[in-house]
Amino acid sequence: MLTWLEQFSRDIRFGIRHLAKNLGFTSIAVLSLALGIMATTAIYSVIHAVVLDPFPYKDVDNLMSVRVWDPNQRGFRLGYSTDQFLEIAERSAISLMLLVGAGLMMRTFMAVQDVDLGFRTDRLLTLRIPLPEQRYPDRERRVAFFQELLRRVSVVPGVTAVGLNSGVHPLGNMGAPVEVVGSTQQDTRPVVIHQINTDYTKALAIALVEGRLFAESEVYGKQQLAIVNQSFARNRLDGRDALGRVIRVPRLKQPPFGAIDDSFQIVGVVKDTLNRGLTNEVMPEVYLPFTLTGRADRLVALAQADPASITKAVMSQVYSIDKDQPVTDVRTIDRVLQEGVYAGPRFNLALFAVFAALGLTLAVIGVYGVMSSAVAQQTHEIGVRMALGATPGKVSGMVVKRGLWLLLAGIAVGLLGSFLTARLLAGQIWNVSPFDPVTFGAVSLILLIAGLQACVWPARRAARIDPIAALRQE
Image (cartoon, rainbow, N blue to C red; front, top):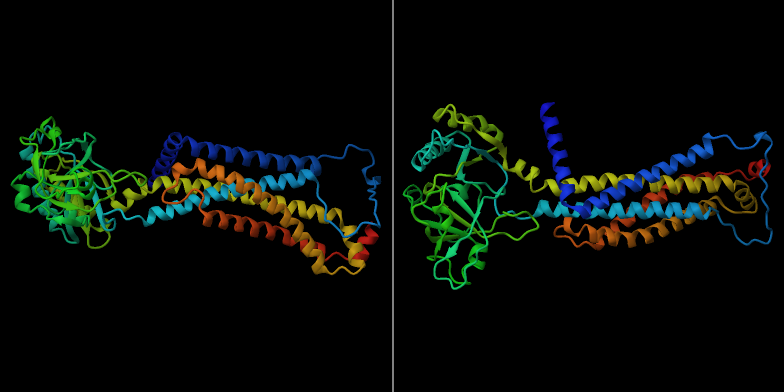
């Protein structure tokens, strides 16, 4: 119960932050909610005024309805008022706009799920081990702690590989300017700096593109070596070969790192990985041996099966070295993605799906109500036509046809409004065109089919009218 409440509270806080940061999306959500409340209020107001309130006349039972039949009228039209027509067109248009928003969010969420992150996400357990400065004040003690921890965790049953980093993909890492020795133009924009052990890239299956990875002897020998990602090689090295180039990271000489040397020779290039959200370009990255500063504190363990099966064993290795050492942020990489990268698209999809369902329901109820009212009010005329030879199929087809015109009018208006909705949602849509024809066509078809289904019962009721009973009733 507590876990569920914590998850619910976390989702609520995320939703509030998300709405505050995205004003365009928030405007659409608030407008949709306002329109939904307004439409619901209008429905109950009409029901109260027509059904529940008494008629403002005495002797209501003696009132009689009189309709004039024009014998010269050709054909028969199922009637509804202009107000009813506008009401259904409005509901259908709002429903279509919300359905378009939900459809675009669904397409975005599907695109997010299919994106290549550049690293594996399954069977990975991650935890943070923040060493306190009081007990581990210098680099040598921190390196010694993690060297022993890596050795112990690597032999835990069910563990395939163990990685260490100052951060973890896709949570990001420290950013700092990097200078390329010999380059004529220096880029001062920050680069993501990773401080890793030998098996970090192996645990996350980050592919080697060129050169080689670190050897264990080089990491623990504190060699001044570096690995860069494709983005760094492409954007920071003037298009020349990356291997053998020398880079400098001046930030590492400053506290709290205190590195002796800030120059590193590039020995390898790895594949780009997600490091700045889905909608932004991948940032340049530099991987350095963690032993140079001893500031890495994120452990990543690759399990043979479910990572939950190794959680206790991995944590026990920490306590066996230092029983007072805290362990925090114990999660799987899958959960990290669900709570971070995928949380925004999932929240958008859920929000629009709720409003779209509400809008579609109101539209269907409106069509059903108008068509049912029209059939009830013109029972006599329908009876006359059927007495003169009109078939039940023709009568029911007439009802469906009139409902179809209502829906088509609403869809036409809704498509125009949906283009505006799509423009406002452009910042929330990823890898999908805001004017995606598949989405627009699919949601229009959904609204049309749902609306026509709402016409079925009034049409069947009209087809079952007994001409003799209808004429006697009048």
